[in-house]
Image 1 (cartoon, rainbow, N blue to C red):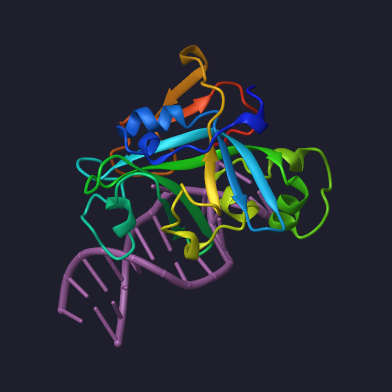
Image 2: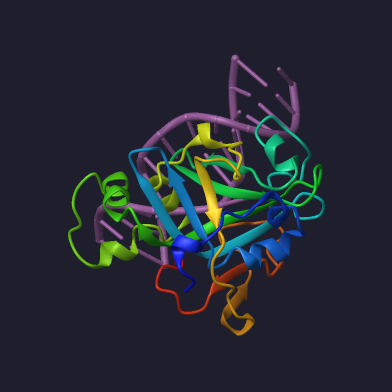
Length: 204
DNA sequence: ATCAAGATTACCT
DNA sequence: GGTAATCTTGATA
């Protein structure tokens, strides 16, 4: 892996490219949240793409609403939504203004700030090694570990609070592709991408 | 005003 | 493998 100290923050141009390209390129990149006291970092290992034009599973499919407004901005913002009355999930807005495209971050491999993540997730110390894997191996888990809720929706990813660092480019042969998980519409689209054999992938 | 569904997870048998 | 938890959003009236 590329040295983290020399890693540069991804700029708006990275996000403003085509949806599926960004979804694949985000694999291996370092998701970061800071608030002065804590530094939380993790490698993105699983993503899913959502497209407002013809993808019925996308929140943006039915057009702009108060909730999904941010999805229609140009790439480079965070879109956070609340679901099942329980969990938050975070997405990276991509493409050009008006497209309604975003990438769901589904799984992360913790790199830094694990102690804080454990506290956020469980409110106690780890019981066993297995729980390490359980820290960030799913979209709801990531938001809990990173303490990301709705107020973070709309965060500018080129700012200082939440951003993504450039890092290794995952080789094509190491990227897995499948249908998306947990949806009931447009299920046939092969828009889930993941780093093959990574232990932090979401299950099912 | 009311209502059904939901880009999930944890815990049970 | 099954399902409860829990509440916001968007649709319909």
